Length: 157
Image 1 (cartoon, rainbow, N blue to C red):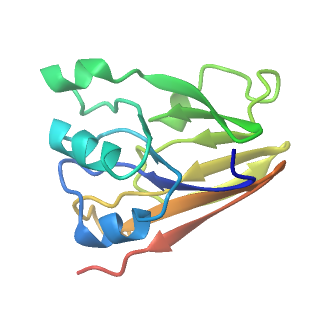
Image 2 (image 1 turned 120 degrees about the vertical axis):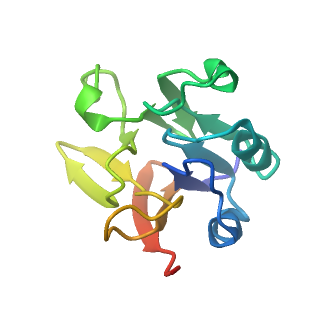
């Protein structure tokens, strides 16, 4: 297993996988989608780029979305990450569960924050623009036991 991993993180595509998002995800060791995917074609395209972990969002109600779970607990290198669409619905104590990273979406607001040793990452939305929020995507970098994250404004019109 590689000691350094790059995880591309996106959410709230709502059926639109922009070319800028695709370009950013190239070279990811894994891709995590935080829900509100909006179509099976997005799942198929992302899965063709790298191993994909995706959860369903509140708008993923079509039959294709039944293959997505509401939450996923995944191992990334030496760390555990928990993926859920809406952080307000977090149903575990991440610290007690041994989780180091919580990945979410839903708000369309990019955010990276560390609280009580847990890194919370919301890449924002890289689908259709909502209100005046940025169109954004994120990445998590894992190097052995250390982890960092950032979000990127895709600067699209």
